[in-house]
Every structure is written in structure tokens, then in C-alpha cells.
Amino acid sequence: MRIAIGADHGGYHLKEEIRQSLEKSGHTVQDFGCYSTESVDYPDYAILVTRAIQQNEADKGILVCGTGIGMSIAANKQSGIRAALCHDLFSAQATREHNDSNVLCMGGRVIGSGLALSIVDTWLNTEFSGGRHLRRIAKLEPAADETAEAEFSSEQLQLQATDLMHELAEKSNLEPGSLVVIGCSTSEIGGHRIGSASSAETAAAVYAGLRKAADAHQLILAFQCCEHLNRSLVVERSTMERYDLEQVSVVPAPHAGGAMATQAFSQLADAVVVNDLHHKARAGLDIGDTMIGMHLAWVAVPLRLAHKTLGKANVHAAFSRPRLVGGKRAVYSQEQAQEANRI
Picture 1 (cartoon, rainbow, N blue to C red):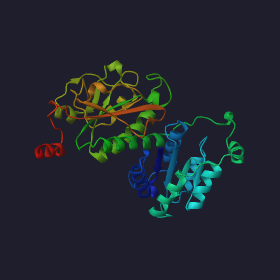
Picture 2: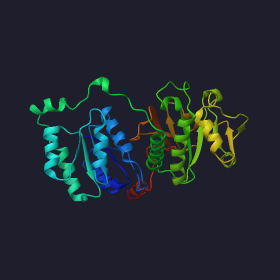
Picture 3: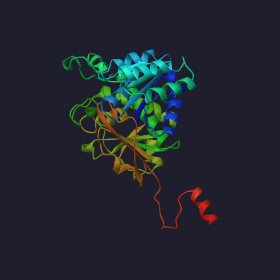
Picture 4: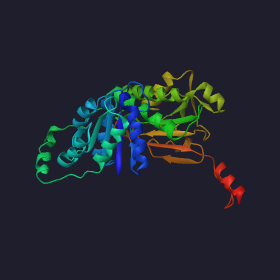
């Protein structure tokens, strides 16, 4: 089963235990964060998890905060979501049988992990009864013309960007000092065609979120300009000198470089624009289909993130690995080498 999970700082530890248990049971888990006990806002994670269900990227969702109450309120604000707050086995069973609940909410400060895992197991393995309950569930949904597509605040965009960078760093096993390329269309984040509606406000929010997580992992960022500047990149002068990159004479602007490159040029210490990265980026985030592959080191490997969007923009990620050389006798890890030596 495809299960989306999320938590705020109050539910982080219980979320991690649930995630590990689900993965051991063979479920496909999309972890939307948070990824530490640093204070965050629970509605942001409820929205990410419920959106995965709405977009048919997950079959069910599990949300954890301190009490579970905030998550259940936030989740039930979303169309098509029936979130149930459960702290006992009877409720977990009943809400599946009678309500066909598709999101389970719990409180990390209310129950222990043993009971929580039993609740999750009961909830996942109980079928909807149907019958008269179908009529009742139908009355829960508002009329179509009463729902509107939500816009994203700067705070939400910053949080999403932070979580994206954390997930990229952790799943790519990036070492401190790794060079990461960022391509970002603020137009796409706002739901517009790339290059048609650049937003300085959006760029500032996303830049702040990316930089926060990058600094935590000690990563070096390079921000790709748009095609009008031949996808050159904004970096710090120290990065240019470290990687022996070629500087070009241009200053990014919103309509010739892009809002994100413009923001980076104003924020990075002693910013410069370079022609390319000589394929030295160890990983990258492509926010809004901006084509960052030309800057990645060989061999680029697609990375499947739980966070597939930022705002309304598609997000793609990749990391690189050394080339595998040799024939059928070659080994590529210490474990393989030890096994070969025993033959």
C-alpha cells in the first residue's frame, strides 16, 4: 500500500517509528517530514500528505502532532479527506468500517509507540463496510463550486523548500562541501508558464528555505539562470575559485536570468556568475522543469522524492555517482570485494 506520512516537531519521533514499521511491512512510504524536532507548523504537513491522496499518489495518509488534534482539524479542511483522530483500537476499526477514513491522526505526546503501531495495523487492515455508510459519507463533501484551489503563502513555500533540501541531502548521502545546483521557476511555483510571471517574493521565500537546509548540511549552492543567460549560474566567488570556473560578465535580472538567480545574486556573499560548473555538481533540484542536467557530474541518477511539488511547480531531483568501470569480474563495493576474495 502507498502511504503518505507527516508530522510536526511534536510528532516527529512517533512518525519515525511508524515509518520504519511500515517499511518493514513492505508498504511504500512517502515521508513528507518534518525531519527533526525543530519547531514547525502542523498545517503545512497536513496539506502535503492530503494532497498526495487527492492526486492519487498515496492510498492513505498518517499524520502525527503533539495531540493529533491540530493535524485532524487541518486535514479535514481538505476536499475528499476524512481524517480520524484515534488513540484506541476500537476507534481505529470503527472509523474504517463506518467512515472509510483515509487519514489516521495520532498524538505523539498522548500515546506510546506500541499502542500507536497497533492502531496503525488495525486501521490499515480494516475494510470499509459500505452500505448505509456510503450515503452518509456522500453528505460530507461540499459542492464543487464551493471549493477553490488554495494559494501558498511565503511561509509555506519556505517550509516546502527547506524540506526538499533536507530530503535531497539525506537521500543522496551528500557530504559536507558538496556542490548542489538549483534550477527554479518562480512562475511555475505560482501556477504559470515558465518565464511568464516571475515573482521576487516567491524567490525570496524559496531561497531562504533552501539556504536554511543547505547551511545545516554544509552544502554549496549554485543557482541556474534561465535560458536567456544560457543557463549560466550564480555562485559565491569562493566557489568559482575552488572549482576553477569561468566567470562571465552579466548581472541577473527577473526577465533575463530569472527571479531566483536575481535573488541569489543579491544574497550570496561576493556573488559572481559563471559559465558552467564543469559537471561538478553532486546533486540538484529542478523546480519547475528548468533542465539542470547539463551541470551534474557523471553519472546522474534520478532521485524519487516524497515531495513532488513546490507550490504548483513540479520538482525533480538527481544525484551523481562515480562511473562503474570494468567487466563481469569487476566489483563495486567492499562487501563484493570481500566475497570475491573468499571464492
